[in-house]
Length: 61
Image 1 (cartoon, rainbow, N blue to C red):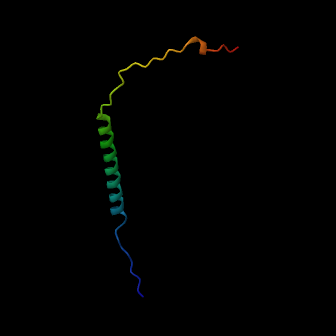
Image 2 (tube, helix red, strand yellow):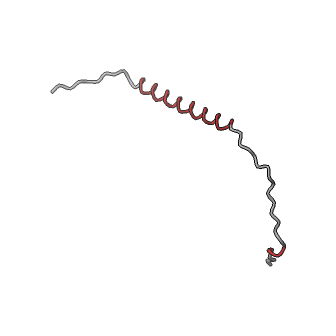
Image 3 (cartoon, rainbow, N blue to C red):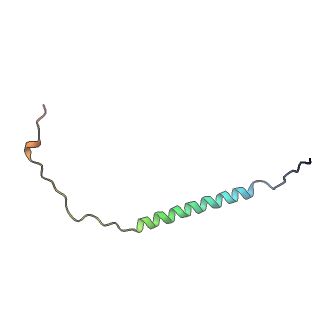
């Protein structure tokens, strides 16, 4: 059996591929963030008030 030596020139291709994947992921996240930011959620119009009667308060000394 004869062994073959892999003589590929460094890891430049893997570094480039990894950096492209990371850049695509970051670009995707930025686009998602911008799209979510543009959604206009309605704010509540009704003012919520609840009157608490004085009998529910207890004096703690």
